[in-house]
Length: 324
Ligand code: 13P
Ligand code: SF4
Image (tube, rainbow, N blue to C red; front, side, top):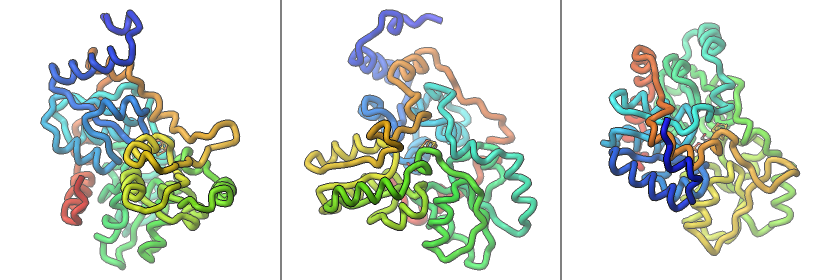
């Protein structure tokens, strides 16, 4: 395959300009999650959290969607846009949380618990989505769960931390699938306490994929977009941020005078990166747009079944005024 620009090791600005040109000539749109590198976020047509990205994918008139995120996000975009080409710069960009819920095991879990409706976090495979009544994200999980009658037994999958948090918020006792995100689950309350002692003037903000003891300490809990918004409207000058470090780019950009400290994954670095999110590079974005692959391909029957709970989520979000 010809790749003239990449053959000569282009500069970042050449790559950026060529990606913009390709997006224009091919009527493409570049969607990026907040955990992408700053250079990809800066180039993207839209940067958002999982719900906002699903909404953007549902609304776009572009012919090609380049998804700078992970596989389940691009798959969701394809489910909503069967007629469009959806490209993921690196097909290996998976998700440990989605992987923690294999479809066959989940099917058995549902069969073992009859009478339950199924709420699945968007971080799951299309196969798991086909078994779900409704999908949620971290920004609408409470709204989605509240849409069921209080006495309706519910299964929540795959994130046990988000599920437990929503159980606390709603007073429900949803059955939780035992899954988690390795990026958030590895953060420890010991490290968080150490940081809060070192920075007593800082507020702790956390993503609900973090473990319960961290959430119990947090001043604010929310999706990536909600965390960003909080730092823009809140009066504090310093924040300890318990989520993936990519979100700091927009936080720092929106509030250049504030200080943001990411809770590190371990003692070896001061960062907390999702290895899957960080598989995407400018070079891969360029290459996938040039070659129009890797493309997300999905079986039509699975697509149709997976679309129902996603569309239900978008409908409930719209009714609840959760619009981007
Ligand atoms: P949100 O951007 O929806 O908060 O999700 C975070 C995440 O982990 C995506 O994989
Ligand atoms: Fe999946 Fe966790 Fe990475 Fe999000 S941060 S994409 S949940 S592995």
